[in-house]
Length: 114
Image (cartoon, rainbow, N blue to C red; front, side):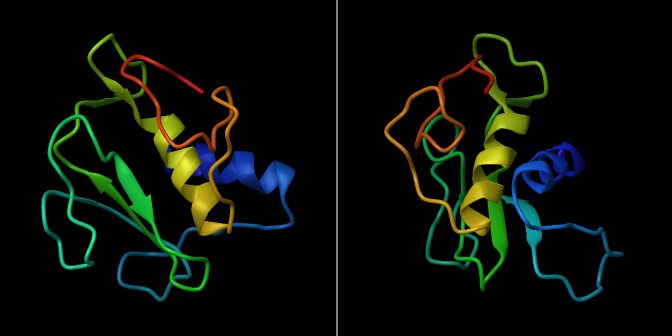
């Protein structure tokens, strides 16, 4: 999922991405957490805040481990690829848009894919 999302952004931006081994220095870091995980932006459990990312110079992207994630979401599941794509957009400096069909729209409903 992560590699696919990074490749999509690489196709439409001047950025390139390269995986590094765990424990290596990296510009971008992705992780799943539950509740308060020490960054001042606690997760709220299922349905609500799905993820958050910090500014480009920070490079952290966090996803709520309590969500019901799926790569092919049913009506009560959240599409992980869409949320990962959205959060990487924030890592690259993009803000939210008012276009509900855009990946950078601030919310996504259960079962929806972008």
